[in-house]
Length: 237
Length: 105
Image (cartoon, rainbow over all chains, first blue to last red; front, side):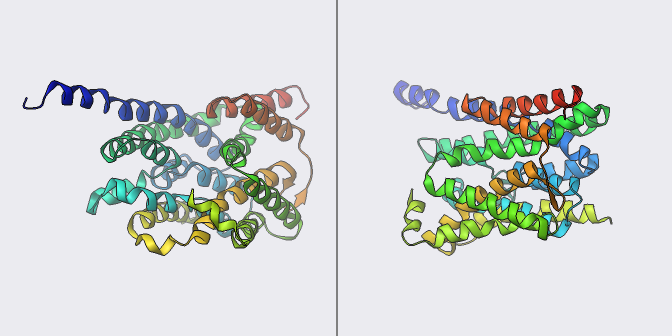
């Protein structure tokens, strides 16, 4: 080894954390794939459909949203559009990650699959680019494997639930949305306003539109807030 | 192919392509602050709408479902206590299931 003990100590002290933290986060969050698999099958999707959503879509909120529209017998085209729109933040995450990952060709195609709330947060929390890259791939691998195994287990197990279990699954989607929304509500008054107006628009539109459409209409709340004078300043953070 | 398969494949492909687009498009296209602000607020509006419609909607009619509301309230309480994601889900589902088992759902 040509490197000095100092360099070796620095390197061994640092790189251990992105892997350990990423794997731990993936295992913890991935387990909720159980809830998605069970809720998807309870909503009327097949085991194979639940698994395809987790394998290729791999976006929790969008997956729960589509399952909810299927369960409600809603307009599938609107439900699909709403689910994809809900995943639009992942495009923004990609913009922030591209300089860190520097992935090209097949590696970029694979990295794209791994862009989620969790892998992005873990990568951006690292002190340098090498650690960010390690954290991204570690979180991706751990979360992807856990989420998909849990989806399959939940989907297969859903058939063995009674009416109480089904009632429980009914609330899994909304509870997951609330848990995802919660930290955003703490960010500021603009977020809370957008949430309130978005919810009001959707509820007001429900009696007049096929299921799925009211949720898309709620995006108007975000459009309005972004168009307000001075509102754009918040994006710099 | 059934309609639900079309919806599943379109959602899966759409979610993936959005991620790939983020890693592929030139940075300046989405660099406008208002565009970034909009994209960051869209999930807030949509998540709130999904929760609201799930809580008080049944297809195209409005109505209260005791089990769901109790489950959501339990989830909110767990979030206030800073419970981890999976615990929030389990508390919400357990509350709704218990109400149903007690004949109140």
